[in-house]
Each structure stands twice: as structure tokens, then as C-alpha cells.
Image (cartoon, rainbow, N blue to C red; front, side, top):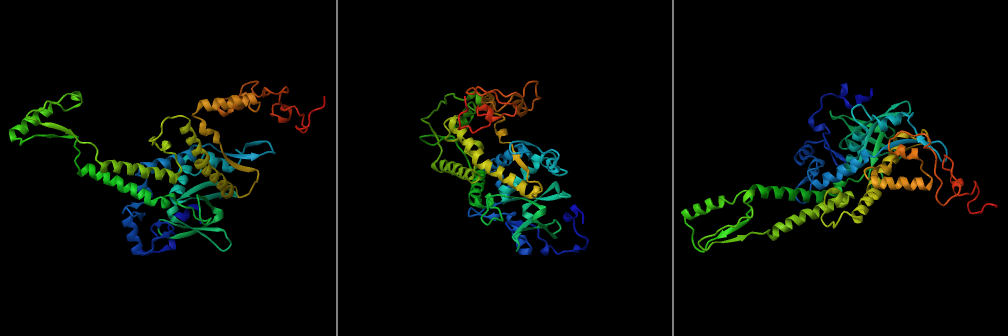
Length: 435
């Protein structure tokens, strides 16, 4: 059977009744009966919340806070440079560009996706469903392609030998079993060590409330009336008076007439209508639900566009951004690196390892980059060509020399010999050299 045959209907599958088709997965269960199918179609593939709203990835992405959190995390993972490195010795690392996996990770994971598209899709699925799947295509022992599979069509179980088994439901309703060795399986936080915990499941009530409030607000705009103020008359205004008043008010419409003083007759008074307590509470409730969504995804509010309560764009905001990189983003980057090592390298060469270049997180911050380069030059652990390489610039003649640190009288060699830099001559630095 060819690789792509698993996605096609097998000749002996025969005609199946709709009741036997596993049309979709809700959570970890698959609809196989008419009753389950009816429920799935009614709920849109999601689960009903206490607010009465059904939460699915599509409905959740209609909430701005959810959309921004998902695109922020998945986008950061997708655009972070991913390398395949080889340990040459204890101190030397080099790009393993001769390995087949390099092409998969850096250029073409499959025939229709770019590396950033692939990582963005798998990361988004891991956020929404707790797990991201891709079937491995091999040439010999090496992985040469990764085919993403929708997590709603995959059921993962741990079998008797403690390995994992993945049952994939094809579009025609037939199923195939994919062993652990043939599946790339990105798992988020897990309570049983097998199935990832979906953020969508944990935040279902919060997201459902946000969807309900959005729908309620839209209904108010469609059916409600919003007035800026009212005109009060001490008596009863006749039909002719109403027409005269309406005609005079027309002269105050438009931006060019903003700020003009209104002349009132017959003892009339103008009273401005402010925001009601119910309106203010409704707006506050929407902001409150947004903050809960940020917490579920581990995203600082200002990175999702919510600057309420942020007094400035100073050190406080900067520390929140660093906190996102250190705790939320680093968690996922480490998970990706370990999953690639486990599922794509299979222990074939212990000297190979994937590595995300975290320094790219500050590539748009030229002040931080230049300060880091200056420290490296002054400390003797970066050369001019090292820095030019980081900036994707060609090397220059004489740029491989390392300057001696300011507190050292000995110039380090081109390899950045730390022993020479501290003047120990390769001996124990705690023992002073003989004079």
C-alpha cells in the first residue's frame, strides 16, 4: 500500500451506511450513531456551555482575545529560526545541512507547505486540541516529509507495551492504525502523559461567556436605540412646533457644525444622557472575560492589544514581554525540540539535535542586539565575523580575531580560548601562575 493510500477509500470498504461513519470527533470520542451525528451537527462540533453557547475552534476564533493569543503563540513558534545541529566535540557545534531532516525542518516539510505554515498549523492544533499530529514519511531510516493530520480525526491510546497507538479516521469513514514510530505527536500539558490538555476545553466556559456577551452586544446595536440626549418642554409641543424644532435641529448636524450652541425656545431644556450602570457593567464584564482568556493562554494583556491599566511603555511592559518569552514561549519551544528529537531523529545519531535560535526574539530590537554584540566584542567571545554572521552579512578579511577582554593582558586565540583569556595557560585558574 502506498503512502497516500491511507487517505483514500479502500476498494473493499464497500458501501457504508451513514450511521457507521465516524464523521467527526468531539473531544476524544467519535460520532458513530445517528444520535451522535445529529448532536454533532447541531452543536457544530463543540460543547454547550452554561451560557448556552457552543464553543468550537471556529467560534472561539471569533473572539478577538482568543484570535490574538493563538496567532501570537503559533506565529512566534512558526517564525523562530529552527536549526538542526551536530555536536562535533565537546565545544564545537555545526549545522547538519547534509542530513535529510534539515530539508524537512528548514525548507519543505511536505509538498504543499512551508516550514512556517507547518509549524503554525501544528502549534494552533496543540493549543486548541492539546495535541498536534503529523504522519512521518521515511526514506530508509530518515524522515523526509511530515504530513499534518487533523487532531479531531485521531484517537490516541496507550497499549499493553506502553507504546502509543494512533487510530486515524479517513474521510470515507474507514480507519487505520498508525504506530508511534510513524507519528510526529506534539503534546501540550497532559494529566495522564498520553493525551494533551486542550486550552479550549479548560477555557470553554470563559470563551462561551465571551461569545454570549458579543452576541448580546450585537443584538443591542441591531434592535436597540441609543440617544445622546433629550429635549424637555414644560408643556405640550404641537405638530407645527415639532416640525419647526426638527427643521432647526437639521442645521446642527454634521462634523462642521460640531460645538455650536443650540438655541431653545418656549422654556425647553436639553438633558444629556450618560452611560447607564448596566452599560458600564456590560463593558467591564467583557474586559474581565478577556483577561481570563489571556491567563489561560499565558499571554500578557498588552501583547494582545489590551493596554488598559498600563501606565507606560517602560520597564514594566518590557518585563512582561520577557516573562512571556521565558515562560510561555520557552515552554513550547522546548516541547518542539524534544518532540523532534524523539519522533524525527529516533536516536539514529545522538550527536544530532534541533535548536531554536532564541536570539531571533530580539531581531527587531536593534538597541538590545547592538548592546549584546558590544559586550561580546569587549568580552572577547565574539569576533567581527561572528557578529556579521548573525546579521546575515558576508565575512571580512581579518574579522576572525577575538579581542582580549579589558581585564586581561593575554589575547585569546581565534577559537576563543578561555584559558588564555584568563592567563592560566591551560592550568587550574585557581592556582596562580609561577613568576
